[in-house]
Length: 106
View 1 (spheres, helix red, strand yellow):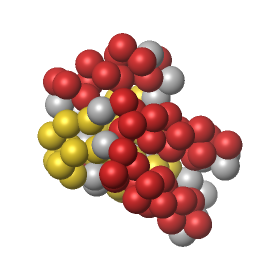
View 2 (view 1 turned 60 degrees about the horizontal axis):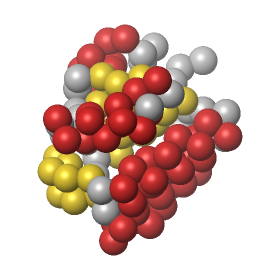
View 3 (view 1 turned 30 degrees about the vertical axis):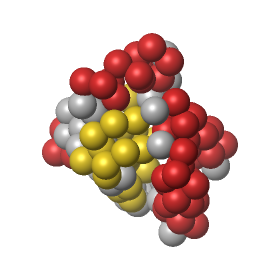
View 4 (view 1 turned 90 degrees about the vertical axis):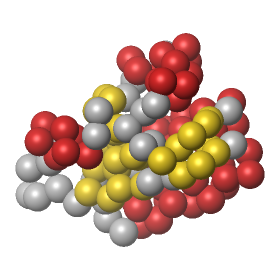
């Protein structure tokens, strides 16, 4: 069975004002039949605790649907948040979409 990959690319600030839209994008990916969801943070300039909470909710939503979720393109600030929250132990992090595709997508 081939993988159905959906990529979400948030941009700018990932904070309380964008967290609802972000979660809706996750739900749309699952509704579209994705079994692999990649969040590409390359265009995110800053993420606060609300954004981090949105990512945690995304992980729970995707995993509870029996699918897999990955991230890539973390800048230094976002990577630090992931590490402080322990998310780097829960979700696989790639440098970019090309690395993700070469290691995960079949």
